[in-house]
Image (cartoon, rainbow, N blue to C red; front, side, top):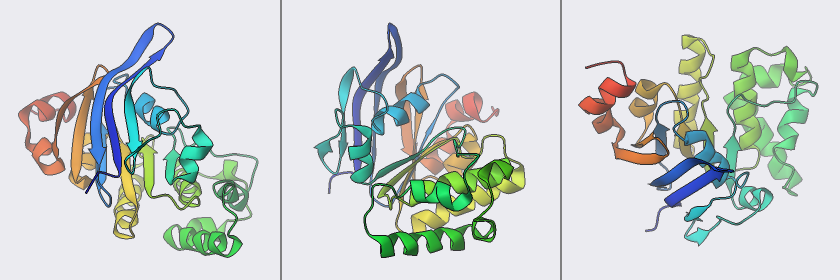
Length: 238
């Protein structure tokens, strides 16, 4: 069976600056796959390119065996790829429910949208309790819940999460990671970019190390956790 997502020899540039030069990895349906690496390694650029916000200079991106490297962002979303960006990017002056409904803007099945809205409120009860409040009044952790919930409203087959624990307390970080595991158990495939390498690798079925715009190591999450090179470079251990 082919992977759900395949990224092959991806290169991406901002003008003359090459941000990604040789990234390759795959994500099987039902997996949690994480990308780890230092700041500036090219992880966020990779996600933005997969979701159609950037155009690759070389390589290919295939979803369900078909290239999406040149597809516009809205078409990639409609195929089942949702992107929860770094920094959450919620609309502060809009209510929780208005933010959530924006995540479903490509859908026409009103009953299905309502079902998924209720599903998100079950996953994050605080969102349901405060659905009429402005998102700008929420804490960072609550905004992260909202950002994930908004992405889930497109009913994605692949959910890409960029730094979901950034700036969160340890308790909130654990809640977010527990939620990611629950989403996997409910059938959502996850591609995770995360600075908290220890938590990400402990959660992931498979991990890839991105260094200077290229994938340099790969393996099951638990094996990368035990790899001396990973422990020294990303876990602060030797």
